[in-house]
Amino acid sequence: MERFKFTDKAIREYTPPDDSTRREIWDDEIKHLCCRVSNTGKKVFQVIGKLHGKTTRVSLGDFPALGVTEARAKARKALVALTDGININDQKKQKRVEARENPTTIKAVYDRMLEVKPRAKHTLYSYKASMNHMVSWHNLPVAKLTRQMVLTRYTEIKTKIGPYAANRFADLLSAICNHSRIVTGKPEANPVTVIRDTGSRFKEASRDVSLSNDEVRLFLAVIDGLKGGNTRDIMLTILYTGMRKSEAMGLQWENINLQDKTLYIPKTKNGKPLLLPLPSVLVDMMNARWELWQHPDRGAVFPTSSTDGHAKSLDQASRHIKLEIPHFTPHVLRKTFTTIAADIGIEDMVIDKLTNHIPRGMTAKHYYKPNVESLREPMQRIADRITELSKV
Image 1: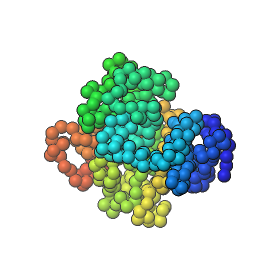
Image 2: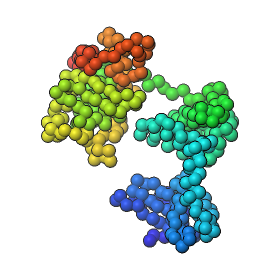
Image 3: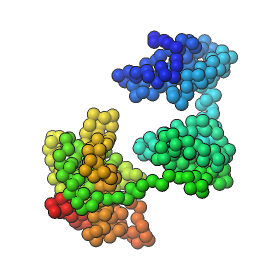
Image 4: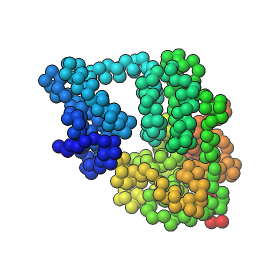
């Protein structure tokens, strides 16, 4: 048992275990207070006491949202309650049930919002960061949120952390307020509009930037020299299909049909599965990978040792490409695909279908229902143009 006097600095600098186990460290000041540390770096304060003679563990909160001083105060209250025979865990469970049934606080409305419409993993990661910026508001009723409170917090985040983080905070808080208004009728007006009304919102640079013809040729030359076939092939897959980065990285062999020359994405950003024809350049690439990995019938097309088993990041390669093309991001490849498609005369509703965008216009939305074979010719034309640019 490892025991020392807790301080915020000591907890922050405590090294997580290397293996998959969790380690418990104990406070010298309050003997029953511990901090459970996982190998992911997550640190949770807990207090261990006796309830009717039975050892009971109560979670107090996560560090650093909950500091040592606050954890000790909560631990003392919890120990008194256990001594009085009060089951704190049952109370917390009852509060969670009540919050789900009648959400009024910011955290309760947030939880209900995710139950109604689950979000993608990367979206939840962004939401978690934004929720950390409003920890002190978690138990605040949404109806009591004022415009001045929102503007003050937005300005603080914008100054101390950054404008992009402030915008993500505002976007999530606005969604929470809108959901609360739908469910409970409150607030009558969304207080987050104060950011727009005062002109305080940071204007983000447009992501609608594509590679020029010369940059396409330069990009293809740069990635050809990258180490590691995964990164190069993922980048090519995005450029030649217009797929989203996360969808390309997560491709599975069971969804690749080399005989029919198609790929299938069962779960996409807009919730609609996507079946695409593979252009010949990607058929050749996929065949080469299939041979390399000895004819797999399932598993990741771009395997790694990550928890999910497939590639999770293109950051390192992107930094390398930025040395030659400063405005480059993987998303630029998706925009380049659509730009090239438009340049060679592919109709908008066909481009929307290939990139799995929500159709625009009555005809595209209700009447245009192409099969995968009818998309093969425009997909191949786009791919041929990209290949042509690489040789100019």
